[in-house]
Image 1 (spheres, one colour):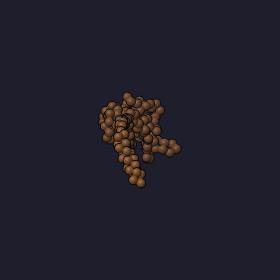
Image 2 (image 1 turned 45 degrees about the horizontal axis):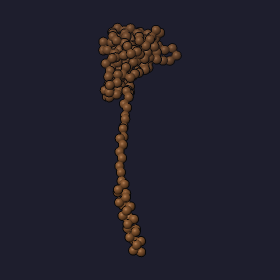
Image 3 (image 1 turned 180 degrees about the horizontal axis):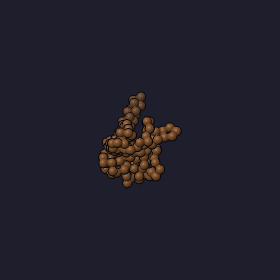
Image 4 (image 1 turned 120 degrees about the vertical axis):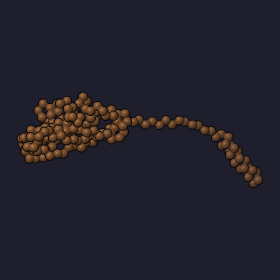
Length: 173
């Protein structure tokens, strides 16, 4: 019995020293990678106004504003274009859009209008990179741009109705 207890104690002692004697470590480097791609989101706010063809005919153009807001990753170079609209007039192109508001219904009546990128309303904002504002840079924060709209005077054929148009705003980045 004493021999058995001594052998067991010796076995335990050898096992403990063996595991300590043969302990080893190894290391490895873990490489973590994140790719940030250019990204943008876009939102718009259209204009709402009242047009009086009699008063406006005698006065001047009706000028209003709308807005487009983009949020783009830092360093992105977004190009914001505005489509021709759902009621584009004959001869309208992406570079020179001839936009119209429609009264809807079976025989719609139209009001011409234009969208511009400058407060002087001299630079048409179209659906090409060449007609888009150039001063847009991604900062990671919302960047609003004013859209300057003009409804020309002298549209006396307008009947009492609510006129609408839908213009697609696109951000390319």
